[in-house]
Structure formats: C-alpha cells, structure tokens
Length: 496
Ligand code: UN1
Image 1 (cartoon, rainbow, N blue to C red):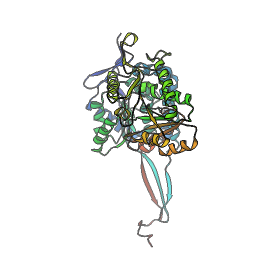
Image 2 (cartoon, helix red, strand yellow):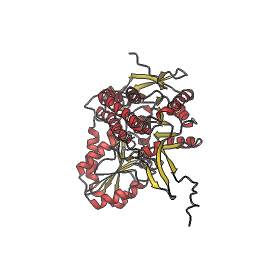
Image 3 (cartoon, helix red, strand yellow):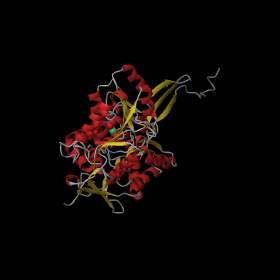
Image 4 (tube, protein in one colour):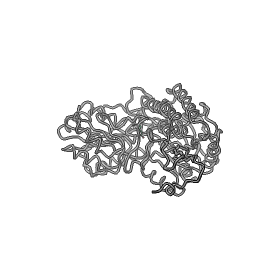
C-alpha cells in the first residue's frame, strides 16, 4: 500500500523540505505498516519557518489575547470531534494502547480549556510609585518567535502544553515534532489551522534532532526554546542556546520512586505500581522505575507484583484487550537490553521478563517483556539511570527516613509517590522528597494540566509547564506613567 507524504507548514503553506528528503514513520507494532513520509528538514527549512514566524509576530502580538484564546477554544472543539481518529493515529505511530492515546488527546483538550481562560487573565500587577503623581505597573509581553522541541511519548499532549500557552501569550511558534511520532503533532497543528490561526503563527518543521532541532536552537531570531527530552540532549540544547542568550525551558529525565510503607493499603499500592511502571510501556518521564518496599511488606508485595506483571498482555495497542504496547523503536529495545545486562552484571535478581518479544505476533514490531529486578541496592546503575522502558527495580528499606534518603539519592527529581495511611509521614514526604511532583497514595504518573509540571536537579532547569508555562512564554515589562508634568528623579528627588 502506498503511504501519504506530509509537508512542513511554513507561513501557511505546506512545503517539502528543500532537500526533498523524507523520513518514514513506521508503526512500532508492525514495521511493515508505513504511516507516512515526513520531511527531513535542514537548517534552510528551519530558517524559512523562523522567518515566517517572525513576520507573523508583527500582527499576532497585537491580536487581543481574548481573541487568541477563542481560537484555542475553537481548536479544542476540533480535537473533541476528532478524538478517536487522533487516538488511533497516535497508537499506530507511537504504540501505546488506545485508552492511553485517548488520554493523550484529552490532555490537549484539557490544556486548551485551561489556557484559553488565560486570554482574559494574563494578569500583571500595579504598585504605587515612590514618586507623587506617577503610576507604575508591570505587564506580560510575548517573547517573540519561540522554538518548541517535543518528544514521542506524548506526541499531542506535550506539544499542546507548549503551543497553547505560547500562542495565547502572543508568541509565534516553530515546532519540531519527535522524529518517531510527527503525525500526532501534525494533527494538532491541523486543528489550529482549521481553527483560523493566521498563516505563520504556527509552523511545523519535522526532522531529526541533530539537523532540525539544532538549527532551531541556534537560529538567532528564535528568542526561546522549550524542550522536552533526555537530560543528555537537554544539556546540549542549553549550551547551544546560550550562545544567543535564549530563554530555555527543559523538561528531562526521571528515575521516579514509589515508596510503599508497611501500613499501606497493599492492593492499592500494587495497582499504582503496575500502572506507574508498565503504563505507556514505561516510556514516560514520570514512569515508576524504582519501587521502594518497607521490609514488613516486601515479600508479599514482590510476589503479588511479579505475578501480575507476568500476566500483563503485551501487543498491538490498537487491540483493546492489550495492556502494554510496543516500545517506540529498535533503539529503545536496545536500551532496555543494555540495562537488563547491566543489572544482571551488578548482581540484581531478574524476577520476570528481561527479553525482547520476537516471535509470532511480535515478529514485525519492537516489543519488550515487562521486567522486574529485585535485590537491587541504591548504588547500582540500574537504580540510578533512566531506562525509559518496561523495566522496574525493587529496593528494600527499613525506616521511612531511609526510604526518603534512597529516593533522593539520584540525580533526577521529577515524580515521587508514597503509599501510607500515616498522615504525619505523608506530610513529611511532601516536604522532604526532592521532586517537582509528589503523590500520596497514587502512582508517579497522572499529572493534570493545570498544576505545575517539571522537576528538580537533572530533570529540569527551574521552569514549569502547566501552571508556570505563562511565566516562561512571557516576559515582564515595567511601565511608569508620570502625570506630574515635571521631571521627577527616582531615588533622588524623594530622598531623605
Ligand atoms: C511525560 O512523561 O513525559 O503525568 C509526561 C503524566 C502525564 C504526562 C507525562 N500526564 O504521566
């Protein structure tokens, strides 16, 4: 079967990459299913898109924010109408199961509603001047052209976390979708175009990180970069963007711990751990990758957890009976393999899984067994580094304080979770766990769009999506209006 060819959207026109080169988008559950050919964009394509965004900014920044927000609400309606189709497209290109891709589209729908309300807020502050007959205020201004680089694991939700606040704030955007999952981001962009966004306000250039992403990060007319991806690439983005003093927002890796205390509701903790570790095939930055078990419940939890992990149905996410989809590509399978080897070498005990699934229905895809290691100590590499696959480690501890220490002993700090019925411990954990997100009696995954999303240490550089995104996509301007009709010198004329 022939597959469709997609183009970049630049200044309202759908254009081929100047080189004519394309990248094939394959279904990770069945590589013989080609979803489409997408442009392999280079610096010259990015330059065209940035120029279009720069041109469009002139008018877009002057469109009243409530009007910009109305366009998002219109796009939201289109997303609602197409939710099932977009979810199916997403499962086909990314692999995660349909209930989850419906959730991904829903997250964009939620984000549109949340952020469109900001069109009538975008609050600044007024404050008294130190001088008489002088008025002082601060207002939020758009940043200008912003570059957005997004990952494959939430190929519609995460672009919406960046695009929608950027747009309502009056910026124009160039987005580079993940190489593996451009279609879902195209679907989102198409909804914005159909909602009436003027040409050039949103531009999409697809391609690789090294060619397309780098060009965006280095372009002198891009004022801010919002990136979600690995800490290794995020560090490069920040270093390269520094050359032109861009604002940079980085959302990166995690090695998220679920702590289970002896007094926890064990069945609830099991449900949470299973969902947190193997939902999205472990391919979330918020995925549970360490389960910290207090000694009193460790044996029972481990036995029940492994029994349930073994029963998970792995397969094509388009089949509604499947619980765990494929990994997104062969490189991710290699990473899972690599970490299984590392864990074994370090002396961890493999309780289940540990291999790619290859025969029969798995033959044409990239599948990996849900994998559990026990006997893991906090110093092991498998306990410290992100796998981004269906691989989870069990670590035992004696006291609550020890659990917090282990949870905090890594470089990452995105999400954490504590299962307990002890309210004192719960509050101590909320205060002491070094992470941008802490859940009590809920898994490490499942953030809602209107709360701050992001992490500490190597997970982020201090910015937040959700609540906090507008702080990144606007810049403060101080405005003074002197109505005294004379020169008044601050710090001088009013001095003692
Ligand atoms: C991510 O893992 O990159 O909190 C984002 C969650 C989702 C978003 C995850 N709402 O798990």
